[in-house]
Length: 482
Ligand code: TAP
Image 1 (cartoon, rainbow, N blue to C red):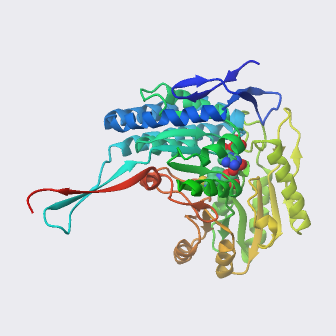
Image 2: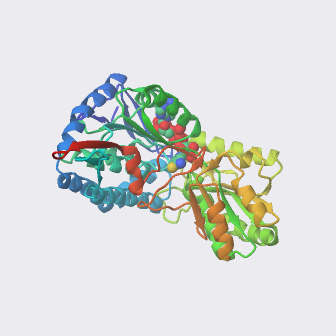
């Protein structure tokens, strides 16, 4: 077998017990490489090495730690064109999105490089005379990071960067569908002057390596992004060892479009939110909750916008919608199209599989109308380039429909009314709210996360990340003669 790529364990690139092929979803004739699958004993080696390395890392000067994170971030930004192309080749998102993702991932490292130096704690007098109190944060120890394929570099980076910045060792299990991006990031990290074993890449299947990692008593904290079902398994595994954990899971984000909306803003936000990254975004808006007064005009304009999107090979100039990430994902999308028809929706445009010049998992983005919020289509996460319009009579109904979901990651509204926007912002049952913006598109210096079944545990990103990656210690010091 040629083009073998290995895991990075205890400071060395280690051959796998087996290898899996990484196939380009835009062209299934293109095999990107063969990627190592770690054995359970290799995972144990990584866990073992992480312990001593983490101890050394806490003793590493802050400026060195800061410089290492800065180096990683700057290299990623400088190489975003090259690494973005690799990401788009294996994941299928259009080239501009792939490059943008790698650049953003670099920004997570440079942001957390700065956070290394933001050292603060509390001091207080004890209630006992002559005793002082010192409250500070310390690293958790070894952190397990389990990440999905849809943002293979950014999601991992917003976990790895704070984990290292706050003094932890990392064991990273990326998704098996996007190993090339994981290896590219690891290769950059592997060249840094860090203790051997501080950062470990253990590629392998979720059910084997992922599950064993989550169950390990050697892990001090777990950060997981992925599906709701797997998230519950992680939670059960973590609970057995009382391991601290955080979950970012599924979603069913609504975009409300009111009768006073700027129609250009509404169509642009709905198009970007519903179809960007082929709908494979946890922040995608698959429910378009539209006021009846502007329903027909919106559907007409949205139909034109949706039909004009160019579906194509991720690396081809002009492509706006790439393929689904895998055959399984495409079949799931087409299954949801069948369900939409069975449940009584009208297909305004799109929804069919496409055959293009290269064999890939292509589908026309679909716009559906006649939707009801109780339909299975409007209850389950699709992860597809599909959006369903749900007609409502007024703002109160719109808010009710928007909140009527088991999930709560992002909720958006398009309106010119400040009072409606303010009311929506206060009453939307979601972790993130967007006003006159697409539901997708968040920053790196502020918290990110959801409510209900979308998230569990501390928020990610910005300074809030320290809630997962650190633990608080309160010390009492007898300072002098009482
Ligand atoms: P999952 O199937 O849940 O996979 C996520 C990761 O978990 C992968 O690395 C997977 O490994 C691993 N995994 C699978 N089974 C496991 C187990 N039993 N124990 C430990 N790890 C296991 O999700 P996905 O299909 O990759 O991603 C799509 C889902 O992620 C969607 O539901 C989406 O909403 C969610 N997502 C959420 C967010 C946020 S921030 N809320 C962001 C992006 C995606 P393998 O795939 O390699 O087997």
